[in-house]
Amino acid sequence: MSELQNEKKAKPLQGVVTSDKMQKSRVVTVERLVKHARYGKYIKRRTKIMFHDEKNESRLGDSVLIIASRPYSASKRFSLFKIVQKAGDAVD
Image (tube, rainbow, N blue to C red; front, top):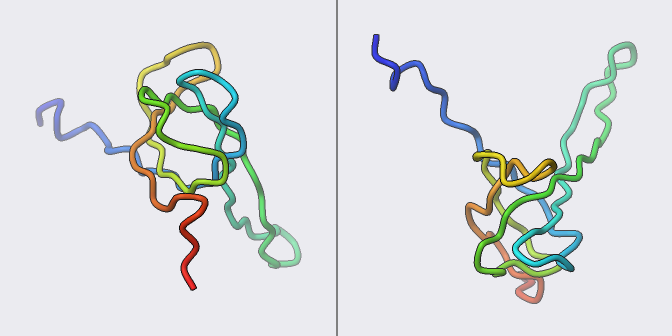
């Protein structure tokens, strides 16, 4: 098998931008559901992830897709893939 077949494609993560005060960097909060080991109830867990936004496109409150990429700094390991929904574009 070649090396290309062994590589896994990274699944994009969706979350909401919670900080846009840095240049070319953003913080997104990704929520996931985790099943409790004993009781079986699903619990919401949040993860804050820094990502690289080259063109400063995303704003506070935007729903975005991020994807794993090369390390940009000690804390940035993701980059902006797509803006799903702008903060002001609420669907009625």
